[in-house]
Image 1 (cartoon, rainbow, N blue to C red):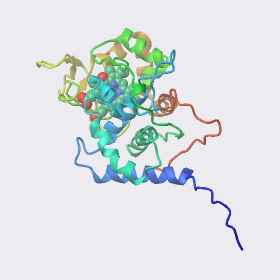
Image 2 (image 1 turned 180 degrees about the horizontal axis):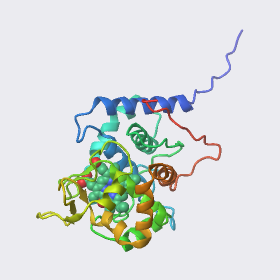
Image 3 (image 1 turned 90 degrees about the horizontal axis):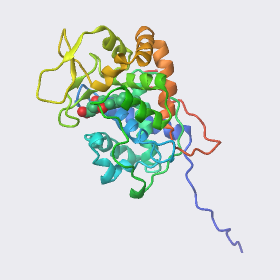
Image 4 (image 1 turned 90 degrees about the vertical axis):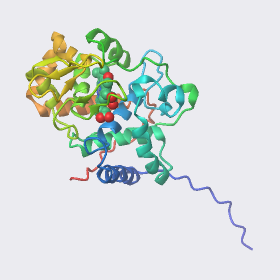
Length: 290
Ligand code: ZEM
């Protein structure tokens, strides 16, 4: 008689193709749901990935994208995260279709996908983030305050481990998306093409004349000629500070340099505090336009 050997339970180990399938699903939802904002959920998905990562503190090793702790009320209801439920809700059906991926990996993959689909540089991706519980929520105040200037930016971004050049390169993400009065109090987009990643943020910051917007909202700048674009005090600080301004000038003059430096710094941001296994493969996803 045959005695069957006890069968080993099958553990699903996702491979590159599986992550590419998640990428493709996010990309097709981006295309399909084009009635949101300026025609894309891409910018708010980039903001979700940034706010998940930007809580990192290099001294204590706390915060960062490993954990997806913004799912829980203490962190989800921090003022800085207002409105990001739109991005999290957008991704729920993707999570339901691919339940093996952690929220933490999914949010970062959505940021990577959005940047590529909005014609930015290719962003190499490594999976390996695990969701953590409510006790891993970070305290309020770790993300930058738009009302403040260069000293504050340095305090916040040095805490994550970034230098001046990296602060400026990261800020170029404001080529994308807009401010929503109901979320942050601020209003309007930074560029005329908020669903395409370009170095226009730097060009406009340098070349437009900026004046205080006359309104009863928080202090923000508007461009003098069309009054349809905006800059936050924290954006304007990048041309008030000599060291920052030198990088703004470089990126305004050279989109390839901006893309190269943005790619490097966004990978660093997305991987802050993530304990990858040494063997973790770097994946480069195929954009849908390629
Ligand atoms: Zn933002 N950002 N950000 N940012 N951000 C907003 C929107 C977006 C700051 C900030 O206060 C704000 C980085 C850095 C900094 C994006 C990406 C990145 C908004 C508007 C504010 C107020 C929110 C709203 O009302 O919806 C400050 C002070 C920063 C310090 C430098 C970095 C770094 C980013 C990515 C790498 C993006 C894509 C948006 C647009 C979101 C959307 O919904 O359109």
